[in-house]
Length: 379
Image (cartoon, rainbow, N blue to C red; front, side, top):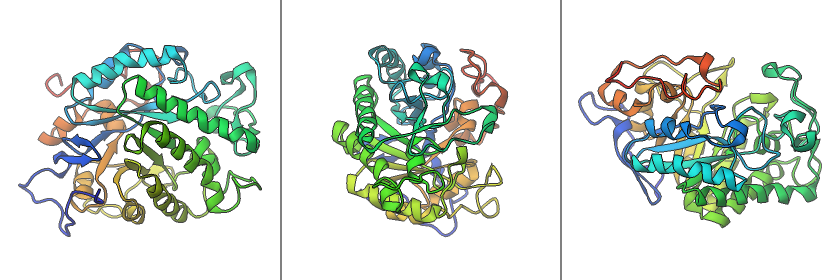
């Protein structure tokens, strides 16, 4: 596959030409009708870690023919949990519960990927089986009180335990395909287990999973290898966030980490690489003035051979320019898509957007802040 299907331009989209975000794109064997992706968004409405019927409405509301949706982060095992009412994919009950949700999305003609998560140390004894310690690359805990939670001290995984965790991802990927998903996204971002191995301010191991960049990347690449062997490389993507500082997860050389991973992933010929733009002072920013696209991810975009997805702080104008100038192939939208189930239609018409209500992002209500955002014709 070529790096992207847009031609490079120095001037951005023509005023009366096609809207770049709404141009078709071929991602591996999948034909996308536009470049707008639903980003993975925690919604905390899967009671007892089982997806619920209301999720079928939520996701199908945001589904369009040829659109790509990525689910909220979904636990790969009973040790993968760190938040209330997040879904899983490790039990038969969970697989069966996902099936009607997937069907509802497919009925709209959309493409649906499941995001696979292990939180690692971002957990407490209360979320762990038998009240045990969360597992991680390290026995250093997340700062007490961060995000208002007293995170429980983790237990450093022994080297002989790591293959079992890799296998959890493999089995979860198999379960996702059984549930009907078109593919999976491995969650290697936002301070969770894979990133706890990747980043040098967390990973303090002295074995072959710690120290050098190559060693710190070993666990992530073993997960990618296992998942691609199980379900095929053309059904696998990964999300990375070298620049973020979520949950004390920081790297001293994020440029080097991102570029190393982009190159290393080419060996597995996975479908896509999904990367989060840098954060500055806790707020998402895109460098430069309003009409200028960002640049930090460009070396990784150029290094990675298949589809590239960028996420973080995009609006309609910046996203259109980023596509037009071949900075990325696709753009994932989170909060704006959460609040605007018909975001592609609104961007096509350049219509006003609903404002999102942050206070309802993570409540357990099956409707409020979830499926009650109005469509354009209702607004």
